[in-house]
Image 1 (tube, rainbow, N blue to C red):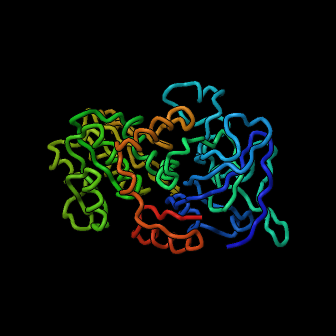
Image 2: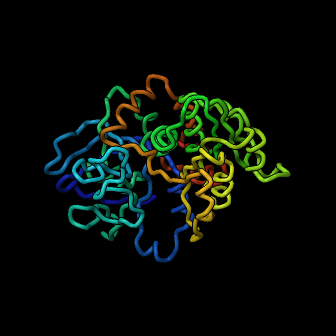
Image 3: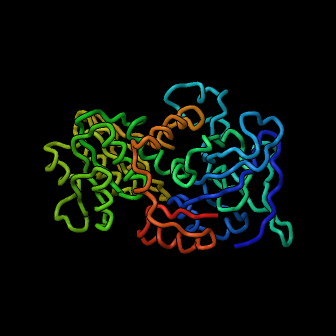
Length: 357
């Protein structure tokens, strides 16, 4: 923990008081993977959160001080060709960029150390592991003040990513079959989305059997632990479904899991959606000729949701009971216990640790 100075918001920026934040595997990967080069450019991590607007910069008209908001790691300007196109959500100006460290307006940071005024850099457009943060207004969504911020904070990343992948990207059809590789928060969100779409069979694959009970609550009916199977996972999926699933989702960040997910789909109609973050330099484990067998593979960022125009309706659906958001909050801790929360996620003992600021 360190005291920092947070500059006022500049043009088209918003300064937010963070009330709730949680740790995603992307944050965990950045935390574990810190090296000398990254320490030369220290960053404030965090991107799944909710808070209240403290102040706004020049030109911000859609929100004001006191508004309840969600920071969103991939923004929506509303004017570029991507934002204007249906089915696309990676805004040309404010899309997620792991290498971006400064604000769009002036190429500078808004964070500085209190002791010696050294710069601290931004992370994934948001930097929510701080009591206050400054974010481009294109990456901030105003929400109804009646919505419980502690719950809808989950919709700023993991839950939306999983459900959106099932709905917007795969477009799961009723009575179809689904396999999910990796039963963390994103994988369970895929299951919730598949169940809501009327999938007839949902298969969950994970090496941690402790996750299976939560999987049942999310609608998963069959489970495979690769460590306990004498066959390849795709062979077991083929047996269970008599020919493979229509949809598979890779949520583990593993090349091996991605290969198995692809082979688990039906030859003719199978669709694989990649959601895991892959830090390895390995390429896709697929031969081009395999794509002529009727299987396809794609990837998804933020579940294909446009954060400004599509997420509000999804939030309303969740709060009306379409999804069980309580399922995803495994722990609640004060913000100063963030390192404990990191360890819980690293050890596979937590889905989401909700941190209270």
